[in-house]
Image (cartoon, rainbow, N blue to C red; front, side, top):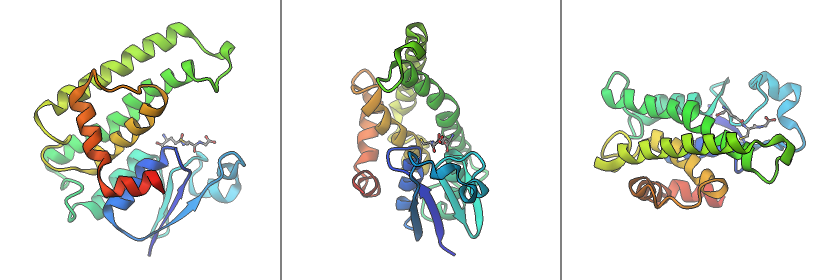
Length: 207
Ligand SMILES: N[C@@H](CCC(=O)N[C@@H](CS)C(=O)NCC(=O)O)C(=O)O
């Protein structure tokens, strides 16, 4: 049975869109109109009680949270294709660490920077001190990623995996909204460039 992929452009769903394109597996994309509130309608909430994208249905079973969806897709469809390390290997453990780090650490700091600096948020809801401390934390995390990539082309070694896609998708977004210049982190900048050169990402970012 094909996968149904519920998405909205320029959202956390890009992580999953990229993974699906890398894997080359058949899927039906369903665009969810977030402004119209389609994600809070009863039929959608049955699939994802959080009312958010991305959501997928695989073999009739719904999955939510982009990190978990990525891990599921990687384990089920990516091992044979060399896009996800085999469970039980150290590379698998590292891919899991970075995938969860993206959701729990990088996204957390990045979101706080965005909410405390965005023109979309009313000034009286923003806090300059929090913006500064969140940016410091966010940039510290970029430094840590830069150091990790000092001796290898991809996060788990010589080959690209879906763990790279998760974080590079976030960096694509962060470059548009909070950190346009990656030159202080040259290894990170080069890695983002390598990931974005991939045909699968080009199909996602232009589609
Ligand atoms: N932690 C979730 C975040 C999902 C999320 O926040 N999605 C946003 C778009 S980026 C959304 O659907 N927002 C609609 C809403 O909250 O009503 C994940 O990684 O899947």
